Amino acid sequence: MTNVIGGYSSITNGQSALTSARISSEKGKFDALLSEMKSSASGSTVGLNVSSDEISNDGRLNGDYTSGFSGAFKSASDKASLPVGAAANQANPHVQPKTIDRTSKLYEKSLEMESYIVKNMLSSMRKTVMKADSENSYAKNMYEDMLYDEYATMMTKNAGFGLADQMYLQLSQGGIEA
Image (cartoon, rainbow, N blue to C red):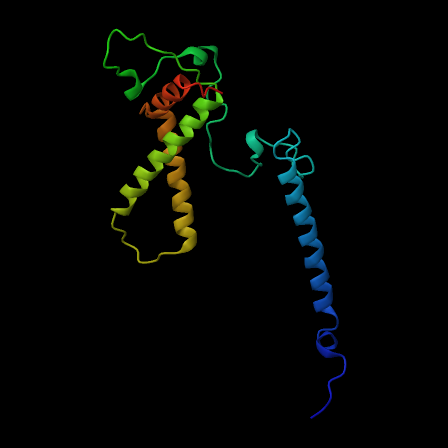
């Protein structure tokens, strides 16, 4: 048996060492970026050293290609609007109707919760549909799920279910207003 001199790196002409150094360098940069973002997430400097200066609300980066509820309501009439949907149907006619501040963070979070409930409903409905094609790829399922996320968001914005209004009224009555 012949004694091998130089080991693995002499076979690859040092490429493995170079590749390892590049990976280590990139990992270090990525770890530093993550730790900086985690440490400054509570302050107003979120994304200070991120390559894009267009950081949207709550630290969401550009590239989040989903529509959200941030900034959906901007007009002055949205600050004191009446509830819609199920929240507008009050059983007692002697109760004075309350107004909703659709520009508040609490209402935005209520919309997100309503969207989550609608997404669960749509997902349950989607499971009942028989599919003609037998191909079941991970990418196809992922993009289909993203499509249904958008369906839920659009339905929440436009259908007027009133779940978000009910949540807002209940939570703001308890003193959780934002």
